Image (cartoon, rainbow, N blue to C red):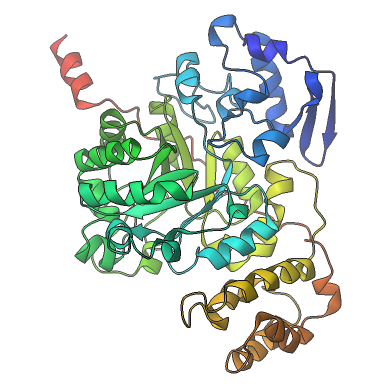
Length: 479
């Protein structure tokens, strides 16, 4: 790539699993050491015809944010150059090559390397405030908001859509099955400045996919999803994306998944799909069971990357540590989304995102400092809407901040008692934090927990044969 050749490397330095590359103009980037040789070979072997947009302005993050300015990003398709082969079946540890044309098309948007999944009753304003205090680079999602809620609460939108500017970059996830309401909801949300709009096509809960007839059930109607995504794109200036499962009930073959991706991307401007690598069971089991009973099929995710090189894919499901995030990225994922682990153990997951994934220097922040800043936020929002939020609402995301640490149990017991009478976050902390030892409160984040070494074992070998859409099959059979 001509642009890659123009980025003259003045020096490299290996540090803690990364290679630091100093570029002309004073810019520096870090990439995983295991990907460094791949990056070098791509830069040396490329031709002008494969040149993507270059320089700091080519940062592919959807918004002009502090992340762009301090950390010029490389498209992961460049990092994986010469590891992929187009449109041919393979086995073993081979991966596919994305075509130069696909790089140019997909280069208009590249998903974040790391994001926190939208979770009902979890990723509200309070959790997102805590998450941003811990990580400056993680992309955050709202809880899923039904389009009807936004439309019918148009005189009370701040309660559902407002957020602090510090939460950027942030994605609004909506759900619904009525095109008019979806259009109105996105239009009403536009002034709030979300960095991306995402449509939920993966929630399996009976309330959503059952009585509501949206969420994962929408995967059974890709034509409607394509129309919905076109409506969303027409009413926002932000990038749009779909979050879905790999299948629904018995509609769980790889070809059916590909049909969904193909139709939605053909009927709309959608270029980014977040894939929860399990199918959804709509037979009445709980959302928690739907996160555990259906088996993970990461091979479907990586096969999608092979078969749709002009699209961008973020992997989701069963990824619990930053080690596992980096393993997925090294294997070629454009982005990784973490769910419950980022909520249930925020300090040891989000606390390593900026350094271990984005290569940023450690901030050295401690939990005492996080709580001091959170206290200011918490006391400022108490009772904003009558008796909501209350102390319990605001403190809820903090209850996992000391997960597995000494003092965690006594702190939670003190919290249960303090909820009954404390009127401010300050008084709540004064009463409860005596249970946490000072050396825990004042220590920066420790070493990250190790990931499962076999999480992606045999993933590439298990990938299904390449997808051919029905039109291609008809043409092939006629020749």
